[in-house]
Length: 510
View (cartoon, rainbow, N blue to C red):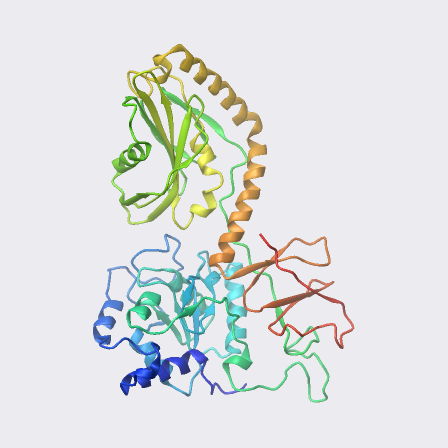
């Protein structure tokens, strides 16, 4: 096993920048730490204890929130410590970015998928063990630095725990993350999705392990029989998603009927509002409305006022866009919504305001579908549809001047809407979920590719579904047996000198 004698370019860059700063050399071209940085003060901030107990288990809640001040089995490294580590010439450091933002630390390795929740027995952990072994060349004492946004980001904590569980003894959690790095005026680069460095990039040149002493290809370290420029790879495990339910039941209260996904419960059902809550309390739908409102009532203000009743923090509505109104209404405006719940969890969702203007007043109804921010992508394509399936059945709904009591026409419209809704819910939901499933798959794939450092490839041999592969390599090939290899050499061809048939895998363009 070669000795780790050559540090990454990242280390050299920071070391040179720090040396220039120490000598007062302005020729660092912005790479050195910002003059006057108080590293002692930064260290105190980065190590601030929020009172969150450290855990050896993966964090399964919202990924944005206060984190522990320590990590079992690993060490917290500060900006000052990371710069000092970079100055060492006798050790190679792998800096792994699990944030996936357009800006990253120099030469960081994309590894957002390592931050997934779950368990240490899941496919993600198995893939992590294999990936880290390739990254470190099997050296369990290789320094691995994990970072995300800030000390209120759990993604790097999860990734570090996965490395610790894989047996690595020098796991460094850069708790301050990208924000602390930039606050020190240290250099960053645009995210490139750079592949993880293989042994040749991390260490001194190593012999071609694709050949043995007699010049033959293959061997125990390379079962594909290909040159060492090709590395065997495995498809990435697909993340669990909250798929649309296969069926809905019809709930009926005194004033409304509504669609209830399996396992969900009714949180409130009164004269003005209906709420439905997911079994794990991470998602909900809301319908709330009023009749007899002034004709000039602004829909965004009405929505903001209704959502503010629960006391969320940092409630914000996006720009309004025209939408299809609920049955019995004539117009609607839809907004993206975000806030922080009373429990401190960031939430996202969609809120729609449907309006039915009358002679001297209007009726407004807000339907909202929200979930914790980390799970919203799983619900975005189907939960708003469930939120809208509410029909008034009592003339006093939304107040004394309820829609059904307001005039016969609206009453008939709601009666017809109720009948259509029942037929739709009982007979046609499966067709709707099929379409929504396809939408969920597309959105989740895009989400994983953007934040999870994965890419989707087609199998050129046909008959096999697309597979997700990490951004560890820039080119992938597959043979008829389904074996896959990756390489960073665009000119490399595994068919040269091989008795098998290999075909290049093409990325799926979305």
